[in-house]
Image (tube, rainbow, N blue to C red):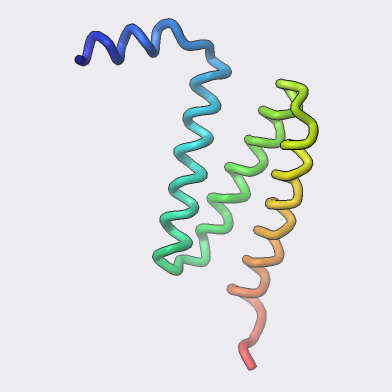
Length: 87
């Protein structure tokens, strides 16, 4: 089984590995958000910026626009959660 994993990793391109790492960072952000940690937004911002660059490189512009919208929502969410006073 370990040999199969190594074989898959050795045949994957650097871009594929970057995509999988970014997916893991995205899931970490979702997990931290579910745990109500304000810094989940920072993790998500890093992931979304990575997805934007990845999608631009892959010429997938609609998805890059989607992650740009997600990034702006992350910034707004962090502002509301961390800095805005509750009423």
